[in-house]
Image (cartoon, rainbow over all chains, first blue to last red; front, side):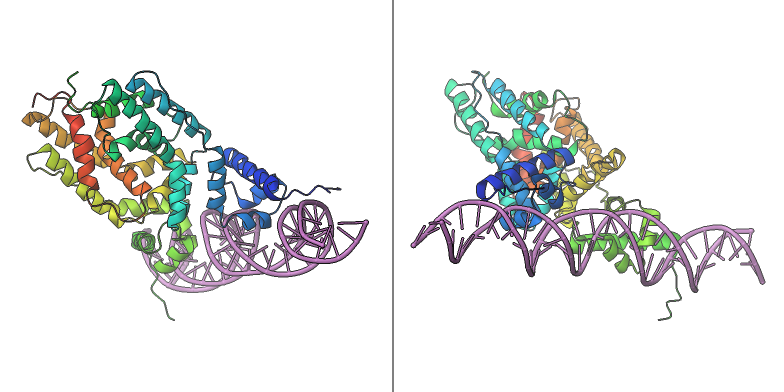
Length: 195
Length: 195
DNA sequence: ACGATAAGGAACCGCTGGGTCCTTATATGT
DNA sequence: ACATATAAGGACCCAGCGGTTCCTTATCGT
């Protein structure tokens, strides 16, 4: 009854973002509503809309908060580095509700600024940097040709993995990561390799 | 006033599907509502729901009706065949509202049967057959190694093009198709080509 | 000519994202 | 210590959504 404790500011904000994330994980993107999030956070929609302009904006905040910081693998071999990186991203994707990515794409389409923000988290812009480091190291080792490959090839691993999540229904096939790396990415990294 | 003409059966059904398609093109996936489609078709939601269980189901019917039949290009060269095929698919994609694909993915997720049907149209299952013919011909010509590449490589062109539509905002970059073919697909088709 | 079928149309349901308004608890400046 | 600005809580409202129900009436097969 006497709920005399009233949270404010960043304390409240963090509680809301956490509630949004939990609701997202438990109910999925489609069913995580502003009402359900407010209820879970023990507050009201009013407070939510004071901080975020719209539903997808709140979800982006929740996603940003839990976006994994991917460290750079360093096994000594390009292929193994890439497999490790992709395996890590796979873990992150496995924590996301299956309709999160497509839902965010749909709901941020009409706001270019929001769409860009979405891309930064969902399209793995941070991951590109990691990939670059891996490839530079490989070039230093002489495993691949010196110089970075095209932007498209850099994006390729994560693009293909995300594609897998968007277009498949159940959990990811076991060999998906190694298939993508071994059958597609690796052959492109040694364009006319002498061996 | 005297709307004494009352359509029935397939006549009405085709009118509805066409209205759904028009509404989809003009308003986009998110804003094409059952109400607006019924209104445009000059009928009521009642009639829509008698034929299709849900909104995405109606959209799939509309998409099926207008799914382009892709003929097999035959230029005499693998690369040109693939560029022609992809260019054609690009044209089809350009006719679709930008949020159609992601919207359908989101809304069919919880019904595996529907999700599969969606994949057949959206993921270009018919296109895989065309790609297979192109590659078989190329093998016969000796342009690529005999035998079909892995399923993943077969899917690769259309997967990458669709990915482009899902993850970009404005119209597609001019060189997207040729980049995908020349930088990624083609190098994979001549695994250790003797030249 | 008639009876089954189904179209038209309206009302209804629970819910959504989004917004308003008022009361009351809290943090802060003095 | 107290006054005041700020913002949380919460109730309520809104138009519109997907989906459903019900009733009237036009059409088709026989």
